[in-house]
Image (cartoon, rainbow, N blue to C red; front, side):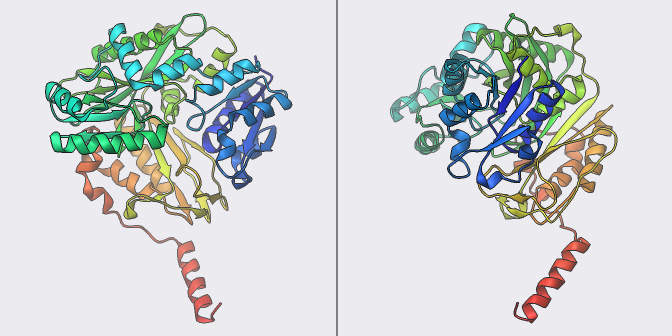
Length: 472
């Protein structure tokens, strides 16, 4: 097992990795920017070192991070998610310098990161894919011809990335021409590669992903699925396991396909195979995420398996202790992503000092976060500040527990998505399991929540009025 591990990330996921290392008796090293001096992951690590310059560049400089790792005697690096987690150059440099990268190989990251290559690999492995092109599209006339063959509506997708960036939907030829240009520009800006390809667009599908664990001894298992259909602009808001729309037969088929996908990619580590499921319950490969996912806690809650510890132990060469038949799903779990955003203002980021923080508790409630009272939420980073995870024996119990937990959760001083998430949890369609990727778009009434006043708000308003009256 590793003796010392550097976490090449920040915030919530860095704190999560550090906690796993503590249970494995591994010393931890945190990195941070000047902007992140008071971050929780800095406080929890055994050692912490400032990297720069600026609030972001230091987190992205692989040479500086690896040089620091060597200097302080680190034998492994965990990239978390985001930042460097899917940069194939990072594991290559780690290998060159004799440091273990906690994740898959550079080759796997590169192949799965290029959506056209990944698509071709899945076809050869017998994993279902959507009708689409097998090469990058640069010529408009060719795109028009192929779109007619595939059939509208159609997606123009970036070959070099995911997360909804570089993705546009076209329902006719005019929209296709505009979508090509926009998607290319977005892809170039986000991923440094302007290549795009075409795929059939499914209307109102379910977004289902399977959690994979694969070791260096050839063992690959899945730990069930997560339903990530509650999205806004292709960004996940709520994740659930198990999915309400899968039966045991479909779950088995999709799980087998996910394992086959991982085997075809020679995958090693924790990862996720993502699918779209149409209204006729046909499923199609979407992409493979070659890292730990933001929503991994829900799988941990229903399986009792610590995915971060498994990921670290796999990287250390340990064989999986579980066979597929050992995996049991107990009850339900749900995660709400709480972001520092104002839903009333088109989800504009909200930043500033957290003036009060009261988190929920009780049976089946888990908080994965990195903020606290007086913590300053910076405008330099992603708006995700806390993940609220609940579990229950039944779907109804899990929903009610999330309703109660969101009602208890008080974060003041900044705007958050808590009231918006509360509206979702109380929506009859959501409670009945009637949702897909188009759910948010069909529910403008979710924005009709009323923000309640807290005593602290009144005190702050009176103080501001007095200060204004006296010209302070």
